[in-house]
Length: 468
Image (cartoon, rainbow, N blue to C red; front, side):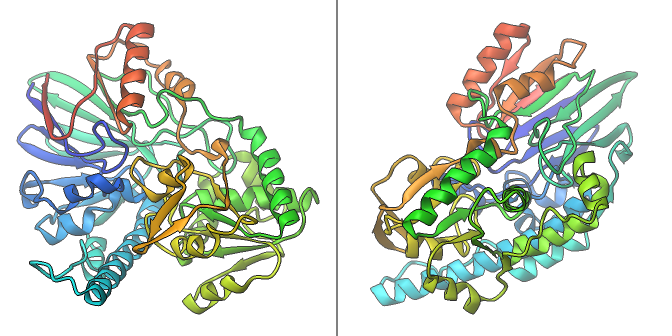
């Protein structure tokens, strides 16, 4: 059996997931993500290592941009095969890819104008990585699959999607290969969710796998208790209200914004916090919330019960949705305290950067992080204690309170990653640890080798591995 795996992203770093599988004379790309770490973004501009037209299909685990955000460039450069995902993922990808394309175009235009003001002349014009038109070309290639339904990819190769419990529609992908009377199963974990969290069902586990390509974002850490989220949120809100500042929440528009609304609804219904106005300043998050409302079948039993009792966990009287740019700018003049939930979650673009400009120098305001901050991002600089940060080419001193609630994470922590693997009854031929910073990946690989005695590898960027 001749199988090759190429690790084209998320290899000893967190973002840019792209894994190329070659088998039985065909090529399949599992995930097609953008890099979000500042020093790795140049990889997205490099020519793809193989001709995109030679790839037979792309399989997407979920709609976060570090797993699907490179698709428009791949299609523009020649890929014309099917793009497989769950229905909810396809609906959210339409939103996230268009939003990303708008940001690419806007950021390129902003940079061009800044260079003009500064009198800078580069060897070539500033261009976006891809355009709205490029993003729209992807949509005709989308093909949806159901959880646990086998999808034939080619002779002897099939894929099955399983609920990952990470974000709405997220999946783990098991690829089954048959050749010369032999069978192999490769499980791509995507991003593994957590147990006993609100809204979504628990992650799927597997009893058998020959090879596993698994994430390690939190491979050397454990999260705070989910039950502590509302206590921590209550404390942040009360302290900021007392000081009459704003609470700026950089948030991923997919899942995280909806979880924040869920917990705010709980706290407000119980009168545990002052009834502050909550501004959802993210057209993308507003659209994604509508996708949530269409897919109740993907919710856990607790959330379904709330909806059956006419209690919408994503809505409450003090919630204000902010659609227009003018409405967003008006938030600069808030009197008293308001909570502003805006993208992006790692502060790499979007409206949150404007709210940071207006609040990060204010000692009475709070910047509240509720998600992972990849190395090299603006969000990571802030949570790591930077005294000054650069936003839109200007430097700003950090005087606001900086808070982080770890219990919100949608990624399994070290204990949960081990729990996910504990259901495997056979000894895998090899486990490839990906989608984690170097320390996290190495610490988790060492722990897994020690506990299970399995053969574990930590591939590097563009490594090629032949497996049998």
